[in-house]
Amino acid sequence: MKGVLAAIVCSMLLSPCFAFELDASVDDEIRRTYDPSKLEQTLPDLPKAPSTAPQTSQTPASTPTAPPKTLPVTPDAKPQIGVKKFQNDYKYDKSTAIRIKKGTKFRVKSNSVISDYLREGAKVSFTSIKPVTQRYITIPEGTKFTAVVEDSHQPQMSGNGGLVVLMVDSITVNGQTKSVHGKVTKANMKKIFFNNMKGKRSYWKGVANQVDKGENFYKKTRRTSSKLADNPVGILISPIPVLSGMVVYAVNFVGSPVFALWSKGGRISIPAGSEFEIKLLEDVYLY
Image (tube, rainbow, N blue to C red; front, side):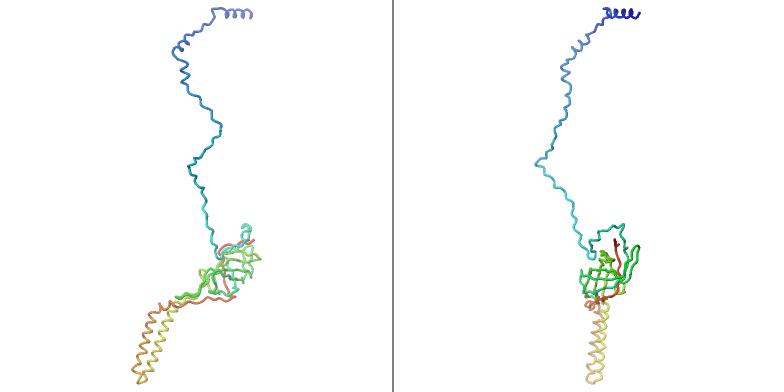
């Protein structure tokens, strides 16, 4: 049965009545209306492939190149008197070092005379006379301190006394010498301010001395006038001494504030072995 059906189908397909006729009239109409050569000319150019050759940027010779910027140079800090740094100050770890807290005070004695004759930069030394106990450490008696003279001058005019300013710059404890920053708060058992050991200011004392000089001269002239008055011959000139004494006394009294400007203040001279008090202004670390 299947063979008969297949034969029928093949005979139908091969029959001329089933042949397809293609209509080419549409193609002829398109060719007459449009020119294919012109269409190809109006098409855009294909994009060019990027060149693989390396491109080098050339700087025009006429373009000046800006000089490279340099970092600002910070001038070296000036060395500070009284803040000396030892080499072993940088060889410790603060997390494990033993700290002597700032504000710690030490009672010490001077090992030499301290006076206004000392010049700036001179060194003096002290020795502690009492131990100081803090956490994890006791600073024993006999600890050494050194200080440098930061400023000084001898008595000056206008009643200004001598001056000595000390800055403590090192401590030697348990064989270690460390740089410190400290000041003197007491000198010879007397409290001092602003770390200035000063001689007594004598301006007002100079004013009083000038008044006393005028008064003493007036008293002498009065005694002289009294002696002349006892003599019949000298009674005529007896008023002259007392009048001159009154003039000198008046001049000294009125001019004493000016005359006192030429007076000098007291000196500074503290003997060796005198007691001082030193106060730390910064922490000190021992390892």
